[in-house]
Image: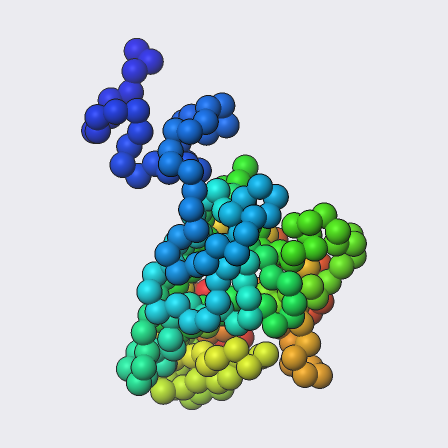
Length: 249
């Protein structure tokens, strides 16, 4: 009676990974040793893990797999902005997927992640293996308990309505510049989907670009209600923990 019917042959299903399988925590070498995923560059080791660097604009999907630690260097953009109407010249959406238990860090206020309009982030943590965005000093256990502003933060730009434009449901051509000069947001897609944040921590973030123009722990700009946000913590941000600019999320 304790057997479970499975629709596959072998010990693991085709969708199981090194961070999501029944053998996790009590056996070794079940899967191949982790390597830095395509789109990142190995720049050494940190705490016994591959240190995989992310830089620039990603117009191809990026999957941050468990077993590595990820470094954000400068402005890291997911996708090229498709515009409020989805037709912007040069627009090219992409998805960022992050496995449970992954840690991502920056080392200055200029290091941050920006998800542009039309693109998505899937940060799928769990209660026992949250996804952590933090600073290098925190990873090295040298950050003071009150440390703030050690890196930038996470910005998500969507195509949902914003209140600076007239008309019910907003306008496809309506947009505004995000605080911190981190792209544009707004449109007429009430149910716009920017992905999912689930069991996510953002620590020691925030940065003042200019007076009264700061990066927050998490910035949600014109994000639509097709986006799922559950169990999120922002700890020690130098500006707002979570700041909403319009949207319907």
